[in-house]
Length: 357
Image: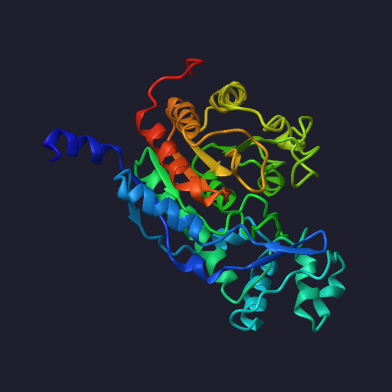
């Protein structure tokens, strides 16, 4: 039997968890890597496992997303790009999956009768296949991030938006890395007229799209901890010397990390990243949280355990900022629920910082 005091304690720990079932309309089975087909790791069960675990543990309360205007997305992405995805998905038969035939920068590709050729104009890789339901899922993921931000605006300290498909690889008019629209940047831009926004990207892979979309801005700080691009996807961004250009110079900070590092070393870099965030003095923090830093993740090479995500979350919580947490990667399904539970528990109980922010 749970006492009244215990019930109150549990309720105080619960955070809003924004999710939707529409993401299940996007479920490719295979992806092409180096000309070979492999099982697609970005599956609907990722969201199901996290939501079920957090709700059953009474750590979160599920809420549904509100609809936000297309113009909110078009402020970040090329409107032609968004409309292209919407239209081409309507051409795809139910159950079929289209992979870009190549990376075709010429706009002549858009004149092809072959949809797989046309997709190549808006892709930087073959790892973002399209299905009939992909646009609906990706569009809903933006609403999930924006609704999470609405909760933060209304006073919530922490909100978790279960966005799927993820978004931090999506650029202004290019899809790739399982990503179509950049959910975190769409939310960041939406808030930027009201105050300063810091983005902290903790996915194993560098968020080339998030960096690309904020690289010339001084009102949005982008800080990323990720595997060194010398050996990890995407390979072409995430280097130490990438610090922003023009008005954005000094507002981009990358922390490329070695393979197989463990929590002690990871936290030392995270503390430095948090110091950069605090120095920026943001009004809102948006965390792109990837659980693919887990040692069992099938497409990553770090050495973190499930319990380590609580320590990571405690560092974030210690900054004392209204925070939107946006789901990015994490593909080890057997460990995803416990990792997410540890993370949310860290947000609820983390009250001090080893560096004294």
